[in-house]
Length: 362
DNA sequence: AATCCACTCAACCGCGGTAAT
DNA sequence: CATTACCGCGGTTGAGTGGAT
View 1 (cartoon, rainbow, N blue to C red):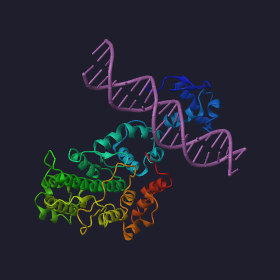
View 2: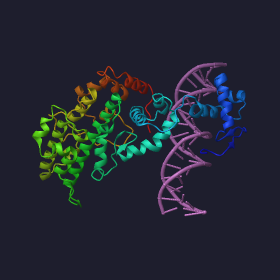
View 3: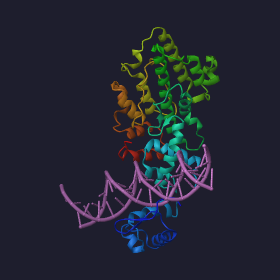
View 4: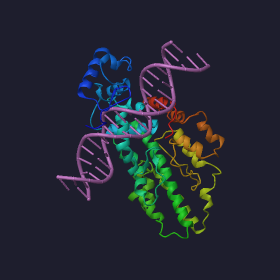
């Protein structure tokens, strides 16, 4: 039996694992009388335990409606989605998974899901691509992260929309990381290895659909074909354009362009527009300057896009900010972006719930 | 067979929020 | 308003388990 060896506290109350006899007494008492005051329960029930221990045993193990056993794929996805919105609010997450306790979900997260996300190159705290990775060595993981939403095949459409937002962030991050690395490579005379060519990266990003066949890929614009890695066709155009510009700039390196504060924040505002509009149709403003990308996102507790772009770019113009101006908190921003999704009441509830709570800094 | 080690999960601990006094 | 008691939550602990060596 897992757990702790039997101990007693300073009051002589038993600690450690529960025996079947104790379980029986507790269940029997609660079924007859309800738990009432947890503090007084042990004495009334004849248990040599503290009330806290009784409550925990009941809520995490003995409650009749507890579902035991492996988490389903659907439950797994729900936890991931909810965690992206709620953070480590295990009890809040548990309310959306009937029969699962906060403790069980927390354990499952810490032992399985966290690792799973890390393996995919996703920071389990921010739900964004990890930035502590060697971008080129870990390109496959980042691409997997970008393509995360494509891996999900469950009926939770609303959840998928959130996932889509996360994937969109991953795309932006990935594009930025690639450009940054290429920019760095182009200015590094001591580079020991040859950076991947634009073509190689574009092939990785776009797969056979995009390779050397711009017409074909443009013809797919209307039909919104299943481009790999979740990149929309216009995003690939944009990305390719960025690479081409970069390639040109490599001959006359102007590295500072990548790192100076953005003088106009079209990309940022566009990103905000993305979050302020339907998240299912992300777009990169085709008129924006290709190299103007958001600052590399730190692996920080800022986990949601509105906050990220608000804090990372101090140079919002007022018009751009106005998209978020009515939102004083991150969750309210999420709420705003979902305003046009009248059927999103489920997720709105979650967000409302979260916005009423303090945001965990973990 | 013995040992090591990573993993799991029940249970504990401490803190913050809130209702009662 | 201040204090106290209680509850619930999130983080952490540690014994059991099973696979690898």
